[in-house]
Image (tube, rainbow, N blue to C red; front, side, top):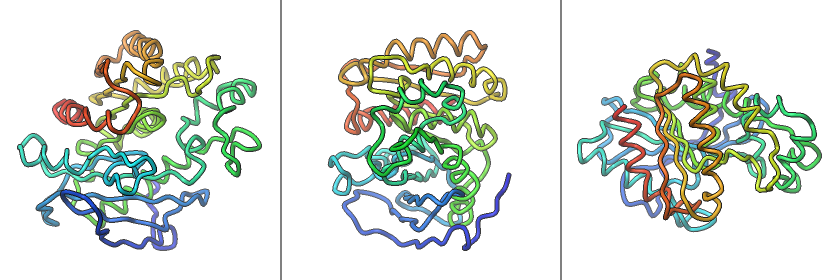
Length: 302
């Protein structure tokens, strides 16, 4: 693995942020850039009683700006990751555990959160259809559907993770490292596990946006993903995948796709996964916060 981050590559400024959190400490790491030069931020949360001499599990999560502080999110909602993880630690369910939230580059969320290798297997027409509603002005998608999630994942595993491991007390091995997210972040959690099984023990993929588009027409992503995943699943040994979706709003459209994914995994001989349905939950941080405790217990007890 190309672990070559230095101050030349990660000119980071690190400081403790005073904000409306109920527990633990949150550090913001800024001035980070991917290999292709896209700026990214990260937030490193450590629990109450964090001891720099005691190694921690690490959970890497996408949409990191939405995890900890509702006062700073665009919709004033959050995942309550700080309260939830700290509670599980205090109850003795989890050992010492940190959470690293990773941002996307402004206006490039779908560029960075669309699994690149499956996307590149789609035809040009399918790519255009998949991204027709995902092109904010000024983004890479504005002229054509360019996806750069491989660059983004490379940043996570070869630059950000080494930074975290060198600045905090972590278990750097796969057995203590997890990856997760929701919606497009759920897709990226699955993709990250398949691309880097040597780095992550488990992935949690909540309200996974399998359709890849808000349109009713099928852009062909599911077929491309299955073709890609069929080649990657054999490298998963003792890994675990958690998936779920709600039954209301946007999440209500995911059920048939998730059934297709479940059937594909079983047919491929991969059975170390769990899928749950929450009928009363919608596609929102508020509902993800309601069930994140159950999710964490499931992936850590596997």
